[in-house]
Amino acid sequence: MQIQIDEARLIGELKTLAGFTNVEPSTEGTAVTRVVFTEDDLRARAWLKQRAADAGFAIREDAVGNSFFRWTGLEPQLPAVGTGSHIDAIPHAGMYDGTVGVLGGLEAMRALKESGFQPRRSIELLLFTSEEPTRFGIGCLGSRLLSGTLAPEHADALTDSNDETLAHVRAAAGFSGTLATVPLPANFYHAWVELHIEQGPLLEREGLPLGIVTSIAAPAGYRFTITGFGGHAGALLMPDRKDALCAAAEMILSIERHALAANAAAGSIDTVATVGTCDVHPGAVNSVPSRVVLQLDIRDTDPNRRESVMQAVRRDYEELRQRRGVTIIEELVNADAPAQSSAQIINVLERACAEHGITPKKMVSRAYHDSLFMARVAPIAMLFIPCRNGVSHRPDEFSTDADIVRGTGVLAAALAHLASE
Ligand code: GLV
Ligand code: MN
Ligand code: MN
Image (cartoon, rainbow, N blue to C red; front, side, top):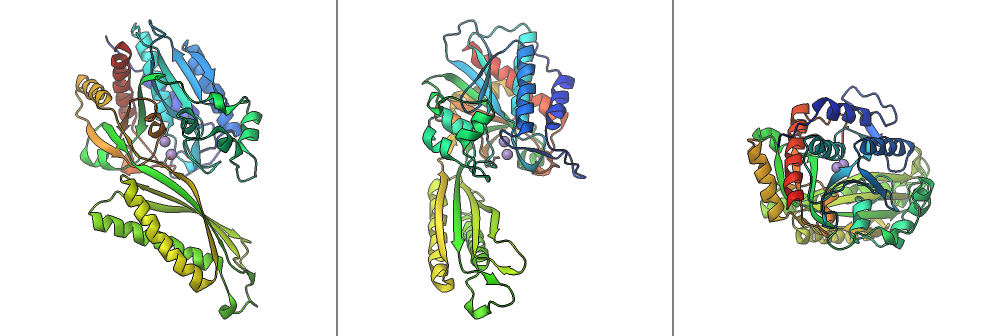
């Protein structure tokens, strides 16, 4: 069977999808911001649905907006083979994160269909809602719900920065009904494969065109609210201050210190910790900050080591509380386990690579993906394609057309093998 990936169609669609964004000219590359359930996200979803309908795939959307595009197999009662990713993009991101897995999956299915292949199992493309945590503070919203990891009532009560609940926002976007219907039934997918850009530098550095993900590192998120004592920047005397931002600055440095120490002790590079947002109240140049909210993202291949870093950080915070006279409230957003890929699917991906004359690199995913949660309900693996300088979540994120087409071709071959099982 000759599978022909249509490069012009696939790359053209990636460029079209990148246009569904606030216009953000960037000298660095193609800047994309596409936050879940904004006008741009809804326009992009409608456009994608049309592409899938044109290809003859059946469309289903669940109550949180996860969208399923199914090519019905010869034995439709069998568990399906799934592929897909996300199209939401963090503020000022690039055009490849997630989109390569969605449009690559669509193209792989179309190319198989056009080659005359008839799948025994149905093959399904899945677009996940809100892989990115931008709007509701927690990543992988759609896949957490699909896998039964997040309680529906907890999800519906999540709020965005305008204090609008997910329940309200999803209904306004046209996705109503109870979230209790979202979890997938047991054995829904026979196998799950997600194509994604690496978002790191290893494939490019080693000159390898494809990676096979063997495990996904365990992410956690925390929110810290630091309350001190504010006032006039000129009149509030230094000895009388309880500056919440000064306390927050020490907290951020403590996180960095303990993440570095954990790596040094283990001789590894697997602990990563980032404070990516810092909201300062009242946020005026001539007012001493009285309250600060920090969001921490911490990840590790070893969740126990991740927890040890948090314990060391909390000891510092206790000392800081007393010394600076501030209060620090810690809220857990999520603390997830790592995921392992399925040995059988890895074998299938290796076979598909071999058929394309490719030697893949087996690797860990340090970024999280919806596959982290799909692993709880299905055997999974991922395919990574190289990205320039390992850059992601930036406008200069870039993968070559050739690498995208190659990854899509291997995905198509793997889907064909899995759908024939
Ligand atoms: C996904 O976008 C991640 O932050 O790993
Ligand atoms: Mn991302
Ligand atoms: Mn992604």
